Image (cartoon, rainbow, N blue to C red; front, side):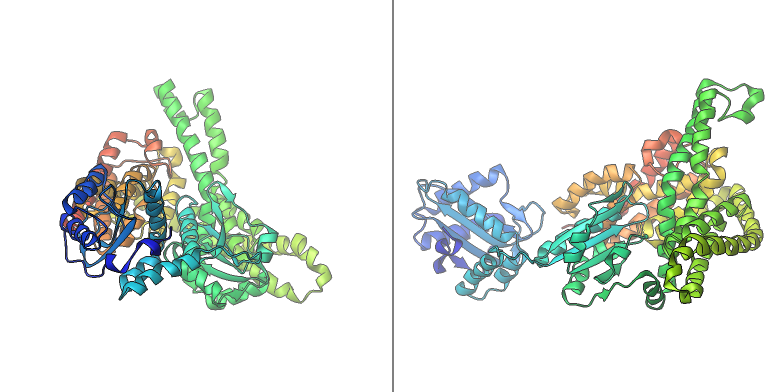
Length: 623
């Protein structure tokens, strides 16, 4: 039995008067009595309420489907009622219901009741059906809403169906990478196209695109803030975007391919030249920097934590007072941990510079970049020198590619294995010897400044760091603060850790935890979906994944973002004021034993989160 067989002209109410759940049920039941479908209004209403007492039939997104199966009903019927002002229906998402369907079936209708309920719910999952029903002017237009949906969902056999591919990747490879993938899948489903998404996350490449899939695809979306493999897309329409665009504008990115507005991807050399003219310098620098940071982070995390464990073991095992200078390497096991961690941590600056250069000039840039990072490390230029060295190495290789472009094609192999490595290394090395001198002084000055921070200065710096971590939740400002913090950690990991790192991590944990507290304290100000996300954000916040707060900020930025900024700023200021240090660059509460004052640290995070939550409760309107 189809919907149009049980939805008749006399069971359509396009202007429902009722504004409450109780009144709406009575008004719809009365119409069923008038249509000779129900024999007794009051008894039928009671049957409807029996079902409502189990759980509301307000399924959310403006839809309610009250239903009853009883001998009071003459024939299977659906009544459709539309409310322009909305009915307070106690829906799952706390939103008013505008589209109400009352299903009435007789006792002897076998499983017709379930079939109608299931079919109707399936239709109403589609946005187009709901839009058409909201705009329908008469009975025929109501029916046509379902006719359109039926045609749209009729499967068509087409072996050459359009397929779009996508690649996502963010600097940390933890949250944005997978959020963008999900948004692209949702948008593709809405647009009726097939999509496969490759994620370049912290665990490596997952769901890798195959050559056969690339050859068949209508186009590829690269929503990434890091360097990903693009040579395989030569000759295919490609849309390049940031991972944030993949989250916020997934539908527009797909439509760009569908509309034929995507650029054809070109071989490396020409593509680089075109990119220089079409992408702003700031965006290029940001993308290259994040590529280096994303590859560096595992070395920082793994090596830094093992070094910290070496100090922790020595503290537990005991070190004589006259040997305290050996703390972290006094006992045999601690010494081994320190050696292993130090080996990994020592790669931090070369990897950072190497993959910045790789992002700029592809694989030929790696050797020059690694060397630049190593020279920055030994020359005292530190983290800042490695960043500058990575850019120098990358652009030196681009210059060499341009200079050697006129060489015969037969010498391509020699360019890769001889000319680029030797010339690139020589020029980059000489330039690094020059820039290391001023950068060493800058690096030393910055370290001295941080070491001498106390009192009001420390509080102000903590306020700034905390605000930066919350202002865009994983965006450029957040990443700038985090990258700066990891740089300070490089110089302090063997001396007890960095106050800046501790403040930055605490401030980044605050926004998602604040949403958890706010959704618990002020339930009436959030939808059911938001309340569920609030529960999830307990884990996200505890894990130092600030991006868990993004859906809340996106839904209500004018109220949520100021609340996040204030709470995170307070947390950062308190941590800096108390001189709490961290030797771990990530991990949240899961590395709490690597924080110098763990209980005070947790207290400060809680204080900042509660302040944010209370601000959210004060600013946000009830739903």
